[in-house]
Image 1 (tube, rainbow, N blue to C red):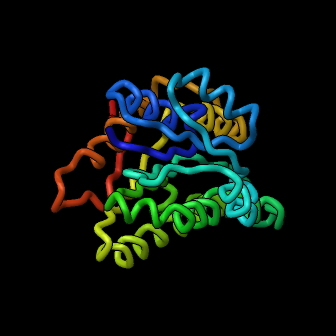
Image 2 (image 1 turned 120 degrees about the vertical axis):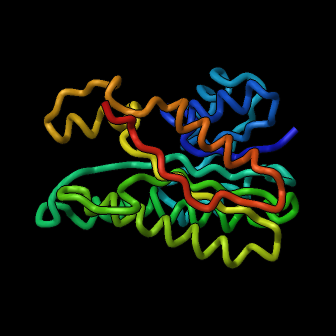
Length: 230
């Protein structure tokens, strides 16, 4: 039975991944921003365990984890949580930049650092669910795209640094996916939201599980998933 630490399991892609891993009997450790959210996650995923810490405050994650009992081995660390605020460069405030970079880039870096001993012990796998914005930036997406471009760099550096410890590192770049975050994006864009137009969250979950299931001796480094045309 593999052990997985998952951020963002409360909705969207993270919930789909957690459900698929729970179905096959793996042990889930779900990251929650507070005790109330942790209770909701355990009710949704019976048998799961939780770790509590606010990803918007990455400088406090070490303290938070130090007051809990994380697993001794981590077979996979799945970074799926994220935030988005659209706006032109001339409109975005330093507060929005800091919040976006903290949650989308600095928190994954810090959480990876804190769990590296457990990942090394298991010769584990780190998966970053990035975004198409991590490959290209469009108008009004500067803060989000910058955080995701940085996340790509983090993954590439981590892969090279940890290869000697047997770690595998995968980045998944989904296009627009039918999630609550996508619904929020459409509101910010002033557009009607039609989930049928976008990638089902379970399809991205399948991509993540495919990367996790690759036999030893090989790794998927980068995967792009796009909505099907037509």
